[in-house]
Length: 525
Image 1 (cartoon, helix red, strand yellow):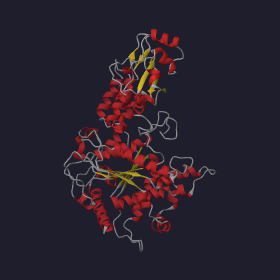
Image 2 (image 1 turned 30 degrees about the horizontal axis):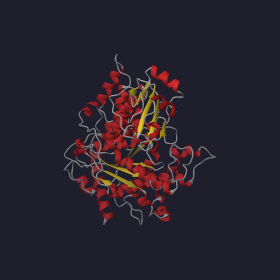
Image 3 (image 1 turned 120 degrees about the horizontal axis):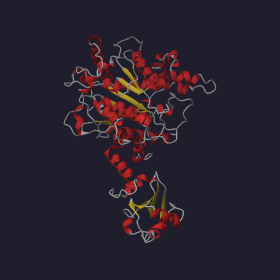
Image 4 (image 1 turned 90 degrees about the vertical axis):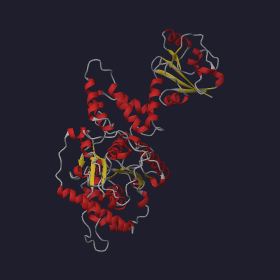
C-alpha cells in the first residue's frame, strides 16, 4: 500500500512539473524582481523530536503540509513563492543546475513546494565552516516556502566520499561514528531554527540517517536491482574518480569507487519514499548528484520483472553552490589547524565571532552575501560606507560576525560572544563580568588554578606573579605605574590593593590583565 501511494504521488508530481515545463516560458532574472520579494530573515525551529521529522510552525496555527505528494502538488499554493534560484544566483550561491527549468518550477504558485535535501557525512563530531553553505542554501529554500531534508550519512560515512580528496579517508570505528552522527544531527537541527515572524512562509524540515535504509540492503539484491543500471563508463568519467586514477600508485579502492552509486541511490530512496525532488551540494558534489538523477531516471517507473517502462520519466533536479574558499583559494576543512567548527564545544561562540570580525576587507562583502540573510541593498550600503571618509574600521566585519554567529549559535550564543569580546577590553568597567563570560574566553587565554586561601587577602602584585602572568613584582610594579594592570577589567590604581572576596567573580574566577593583550584566568578551587 505504501509503495502504491508513493508511486501515485510521484506520478502526480511528475505530471504537474512536466505540464509546467512544457507550457511555461522561463522568465529572465531581474534585480527589480528580487527587491520586491518579501523575504523573511529568520530560520525555523524544530519543536518535536519524534522520528527526526520536525514541523516548523510552533508559533503558527497553519496545518502541516499533507503527507501525500499527490495532495501536496494538486492543491496550489495561494501565495506566489519567491524565486529561490534568483536569490541564490544574485548572492553568488549558485554554481550549476541539472536543468534550467528549476528556475520556473521553484516559484510557480500552481505547484506545491519542492522538497530539497543536502547530505552531511559524519566524518567528525561537528560540521565546519565549509559545510555551512549547504545549511544556508537549505535555509533559503525554507524561507521561500519549500521543504528541506538534512541527510546524515550514517552508511556512506563508513565508506568516505573521495570527492576532492587525494587519499582515502581513514576508517572510523562504530562508537566514533555514532558520536559523529549524533553531533552533526544536533547541529543541523539547532541551526535550522524557527522564528514567529516567518512561520507563515516556513517550509518543513526532516533530519534522516541513510543507515536506516542501507542496513537492510543485501549486496546481491543491490547489484541486481541497482548495479545493473549504473554505467561504468559514466562512473569512470566523474572528476573525483579521474583525478584519483591519475595517481597510479595511490589509485582508488573499490569501496570509494562505489560511493557515487551509494549516494545516487540515496536520492532514489528519498524520491520514492519521502518525495524529495531536488538534491543540493557543493560544486565538488556534481558527479555524485548527477549519478543520483541518472539512477532515478533509469530505475523509477520500471518493473522489477522485465524492466519495462510503466510510468513517466521522473522530474528531479540537482543544484550545486560554489565551495567556500579562503582568500588564498584553499577550501575550509576540518583537517587543517584552526578549523572553524560549528559546534560550541569545539570552538567557542566568542572565537567563532572573532574569526568573522577579523576577515579582510577584500572578503567581507562576499561573505555578507553568501553567509548572511541581509538584503542585497543593505549589503550594498555597507560596502558603500567602507569607501567613505570617517568609516570606522571593521564596521562591516562586525555586522558579518553578528549575523553569522546568531545564525549558527542563536541569540544566546551571540550575546555570549559579545560579552566575551567586551570582557577582553581592559578598562571597560561598564561590562559586568560573570563566571560564564570569563569561562567563555578561558579556552582562548592562559589560565591557572589556585586555592581560595592562596588568593584571598594577598597583595594584587603577588597574584600577578604567582599566577604566572608577570615574572616579578618589579615588572608588575612598572606595569602598574604605566596604568596597565586590570582586575576584572577595572584598572588597578594602588600597589596596596589586596584581593577581597568580592573580587572573585561568582566565587569561581578572577580575570587579570597586564596591558591590552596579556591576560590570565585564575580559577578558584
